[in-house]
Image (tube, rainbow, N blue to C red; front, top):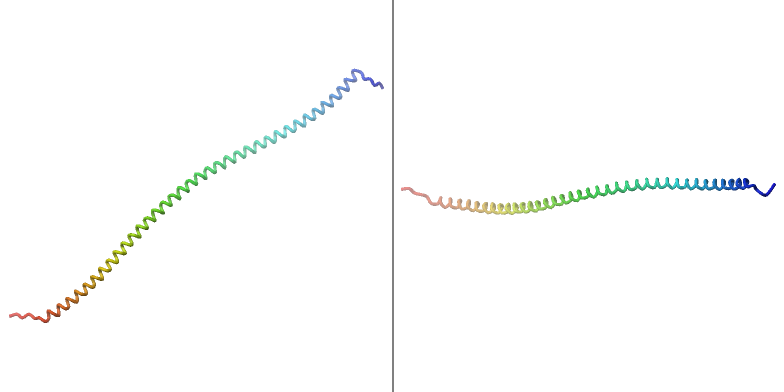
Length: 142
């Protein structure tokens, strides 16, 4: 065999080496494309997860806002209850004062009744004394 290659043979070797190189490059490109596809899928999944997370964060924010509104309502109700208790307390104090006045008036009435009973007893005694005295005197009609 001759060590010399014909120009046509050189083309065949170059072409065969080029084909191997092209096949290797094509294989690398396929692997790169596959990696890019995987990265794209990963990014898509990441985007979906981020979107889901944002939706959940928005819902959580809305829930917190609703809780804040409801907390305001509860605080308002507590303030109303506190005011009502204050009013009831004031009414209770007024009622206690009125009861105290009634007790004092009752005590005064009791004292007056005791004094009246004492006076009535003395008057009764005086009437009895007067009746005895008048019996001593007799009227004589002429």
